[in-house]
Amino acid sequence: MLNDESRRPEDLPETDETTTLPYAAGLAPDAPPGPAGAGSRRSGRGRAMVAAVVVVVVVVALALVAAVGLLAGRATRPAPPAAAPGTIPVTAPVTTTGPGATATGGATSPQGVGADPPARLAAFYTQPVHWQACPGSRVHQCASIEVPVDYAEPDGDTFELALRKVPALTPEKRVGTLVINPGGPGGSGLEYAQFSSFVFSKQLRESYDILGFDPRGIGQSDAVACLSDDDMDLLFENDPTPDDAAERDKLLRDTEAVTERCARNGGERALHMSTTEVARDMDVMRALVGSDRLNYVGVSYGTVLGALYADLFPERVGRFVLDSAVSPNQTDEQQLGHDIQGFETSIDAFIEWCVDRDDCALGTDADGARDRIADLLDEVERRPLETSRGDIDSIGEGWLGFAIFMCLYSEQSWPILDKGLAEAFAGKGDVLLSYAMNIVGRSASGDYDESSYLHAMIPVRCADWPRSDNASLAAAHRKALLEHPLWSRLAGLLHDPCGAWPGEPRQPSGGTLGQGAAPVLVIGNLRDPATPIGGTKQLAEDLASAILVTSDHDGHGTYYAGNSCVDSIVDGYLIKGTVPSSDQAC
Image (cartoon, rainbow, N blue to C red; front, side, top):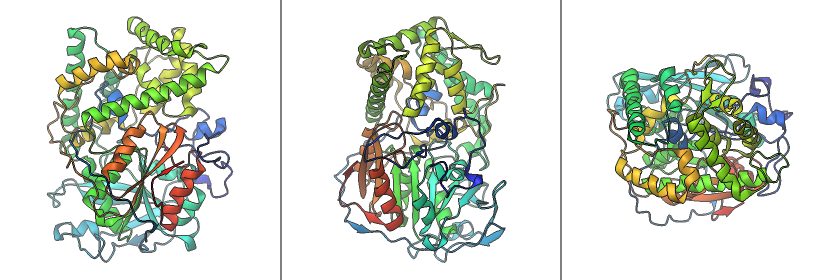
């Protein structure tokens, strides 16, 4: 697939063999996907060029000193009606021109389905969009649009949002525009679009203009860089498993201080980075590309964004695919259960793979493998792993636990985890530290990328999820420590990192989401460590018109990851509007 003739030079990442890009939903297979349910097999070159890692909500738990991003809301969910089989139409958007500088206006009915936008928002829904060739590309087009920082006060300050469009490969087959989000919160949609030929099928790219964007406050969209490099290092340096009251107090005190600094440094803009506001931004984009309905693919955290859009604008939902899902209605208890479920199935899969190898770092005894990892964590708490780096000369449980979790996201990362564990047992931490630093955008000099998704974690988490009760979380942690000791050691102390955040959190409706929306495909792998299948199934229950598609697969990211059954269903829906008559198991 790396020689796919539909790939153009500007689609190829400018990276070396060891680079990991934290925005890709999955690796494009080096060979056509195998039979339904078959695992993907990819070359080392393909694996190095695009990482099978999506930055996801579970990272909130790890990057914010294991303060789990627990989703609140007490939902009573009636069984959703089954979507009728058939096809879903897509209104053809206004045709845009070639890669040179062009301008397009908003649609005649900017809010779609015959409705005009509120007068106070009309300027945003009808603004001209000036598309120009993206730097370094003859084909991709870039532009920027403006949206209000606060939709309640649209005459105030604005965010400038950066967009990247990859025109349909075959204009005569063009169905419309497909808006995409790679997850996070904080993943770059610009980069996701740039490398779309690695994560979307050729047939899909023939049929759609792929439109990626950096959400408000992130990357090239007026980034809100609310954390210093020292703040971000502190998130990983603290002991996530305090042994006494003094260590616990330090952990909570440091978390509160980082949250306060983020609010102070980010100012008013940081208080308006909620997923609900990003969903409203997507509706402006829908109008500006001339579509009555939004066609959308969201991965991981991008499924929360898609679900909230469907709930806000159900009549404007076009063809939606939500991949590796999280429900905005999950309770604390449900989220904790899903997280544990995902870890248990993924660590078992890794151990089974590893102990079958002659050189597995965990040995040949699957029953004792978990104990070896737990013993390693105990040892690292007493004696940190040495590294050969000048900027970080040793690492403790924070960096080590984060690296282990992230390596479980994809079977393509399992060899890295095996090698890293072997090195860790010898007292060294270079392999796992390098992998973890790459994920969070930390350079060898200690500088974090301005576009690092860590900047988005506090503002989005604290806007999106109601505050959690620390006493209840502590009780849940004690219970999990008894029943799931390894997960508890890696996750660390459960606590709410948003107590010092000045903004008000979103309060979930607690009811069925997206009533009146067109059918939504909700897809997920049975063994996903990041967004476990329990959460994907829950979102399918919470959405009124969801069709659930499950893949008998390991890792995070379901579409175009090696299961031809899934790919056929997704492409059939997005390209032809063909709706499965019932839930599907691939």
